[in-house]
Image (cartoon, rainbow, N blue to C red; front, side, top):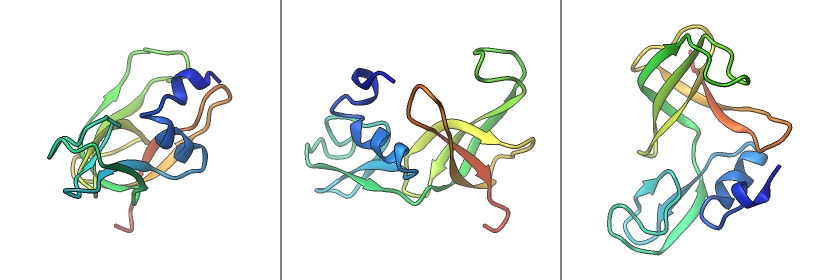
Length: 129
């Protein structure tokens, strides 16, 4: 694993959280807005008072599609690519585990472990939600 990529100052908290199975997002201490991906300024008020805090890991599928063409050796098709709107507000491009997912489905975070890098966040449809 190359710490230069996964340990830069802006994304370090996200990847450290991933290593521990926790979704960590930025939240503005001034206006309370959550954001993902990590940035040096708040998208809402342009404050630099950002903190990295654990998120719920819950959300709703905003958009999804089944990918049927191989793009990478470690992503064997078919798989579901989705934009998940997290309960905290930000949207995240991710994968949904399983065979089916629909817009509006409630999802819960999981982690795809990799040998050469921190785990990637993936989601599963949450039948109990």
